[in-house]
Image (cartoon, rainbow, N blue to C red; front, top):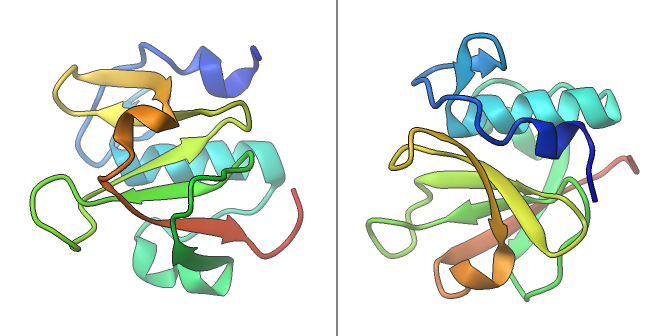
Length: 122
């Protein structure tokens, strides 16, 4: 599947970045992808996302624009997010590689704490 979401692969990681020109951090990437793809512009910080998405435990199934929430450093605390492409992959702004990357969701089983699904159909 090739589309605007995958076209972001390689865009540089930028702390606080909100668009492809300046680069992205994980929350900025989620906001931009979902806004461009669905017209739903999430607040910049995830504290306000509950108005737009239902959050539930991750059970292995994902849809396009689902937001995966990770616990990378400490059990249970969300410290990273990525957005699903609907084909078993997700796009995220990876601080380690300093770019936006696309990876299989299955590679991160065990670290995915929950999934956020838009309340309004995309």
